Image (cartoon, rainbow, N blue to C red):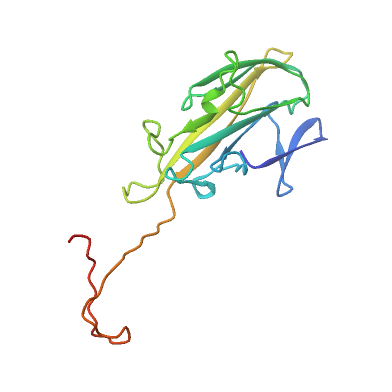
Length: 202
């Protein structure tokens, strides 16, 4: 899915969602947006592709958060609205959804009936899902993990409507290193022949 605003307009009897670029996209009766945060929920990214994936550094925060927003963007009330995410192990019936109604779910919705506790993934980049999705077969490249949330529901005619949205996370840290060397030859620092040693051992 594209990054969508919760704006609807009606033309020729069909509902449309308006994207952030102003493009009209036909609504299939229901919409789900899956976003990801790697900074503790301060910033949320609609990472629909590997190129848009935020980088999670397991040595810094060691967790990835997801949130799901479901909207009835059609012209019929919906029942039996089901949210699933096979990678995260989410399979939740959120019940009915009225026309224009929107619900947002985060890892804080962790009571026994919600099933959304898995939207918080501590150590995701240390123990990624198996098999994880990666944009490269090169083992030296950062691993990129993809998972998809899906929503389904029944309209008043008994027909099923559905939507899905991926979220990508890149497992990588900014690379920084420090080397400390020592010189005991007594030559001035400006002398190009001065000898330096990386004396890690006595």
